[in-house]
Image (tube, helix red, strand yellow):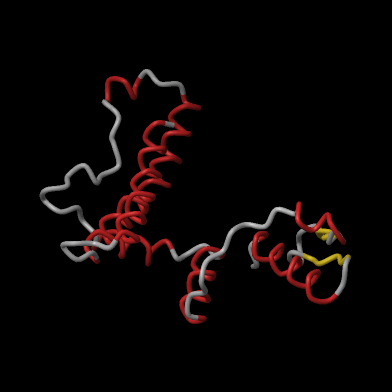
Length: 159
């Protein structure tokens, strides 16, 4: 299955390279998106997401596949079980709700919290795995990557 974002990017690329207007299907079971390229002076007002230098094609293809497809639950569990937090970073765990408070929370809130925990668990394990890949003096880019992941975890905690 192709992700809507990838389909849209391909539709835009097709529109840019082949014609001014096109209709490109996102996937067999999804609606089509009509992409209209503005002409003349209006092109400078079209918003395009910023992009950086390319990754290797193999890495880009691998990441695209990981992002666009649901991964095998058993494989993910096996990977997550390997990445336990370091002894000096016990904060890298999914927060638990006090059982006395949990008993008094409405079912809808519990359901939402459980979904957020399910989302947060692989994020925290990923932070552990990424942190273990860093040298003692990480580059600025590595520091920023970890900061973005940590901020995502903080945002989930505040939700």
